[in-house]
Amino acid sequence: MVWAPLYSTVRDDLPPARGAGAGQQAGIALSIPNLITLGRILLVPIVVWAISSGAMWIAFVLFVVAGISDAVDGFLAKRFNMTTELGRYLDPLADKALIVSIYLALGINGTIPRWLVILVVSRDILIVGGIMLSWLMGDPLKIKPLWVSKINTAAQIVFACVVLGSIGFEIKADYLIEAMMAVVTCTTLLSIAAYVVEWMKHMNSAAAEP
Image (cartoon, rainbow, N blue to C red; front, side, top):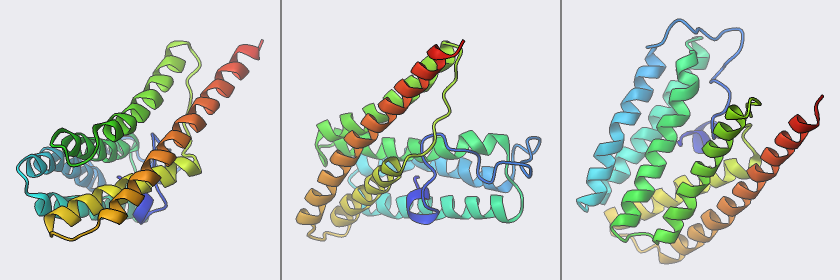
């Protein structure tokens, strides 16, 4: 989740398959790593329920469990050559689903500013929209994780952890929350700008080709 930024130098925004390459096993869809990833997806509604019910400490614990599971499935996939084509798409989907759901839930109950939720969600929508548009135009764009995007994802995760942990365990962390909110805002804007530039370069180069 998310995960990547904190446990394996960040797998972000539709990255290459975990360990993808010659050892990737396209035929084994429901490998152990994929089952762990599915379990992480199943945690999403439980985390949202915990936040909406005010049980922030439960949401915090589940968030940490999700992060550990992300590290475990990535390790198993690489260590035991259990990578699959399904895992290539399922893993980042699970990470993004968890992060976006947490931000939406926190925004709806007023724990974090709604403008921040809109900014975070809009970034992912813009990236996915750009990929789909390039695909529809017959020149698919392969998004590579940018360093600013990795920092942004890490900041989003740390911010969510701090918010959930401070409320769930009644820890005073106002200054840290404000600082992390500023980091998330700045890195999200920079990430959006970086991906827009990459998309424009790709489309211009495609148009220039004979």
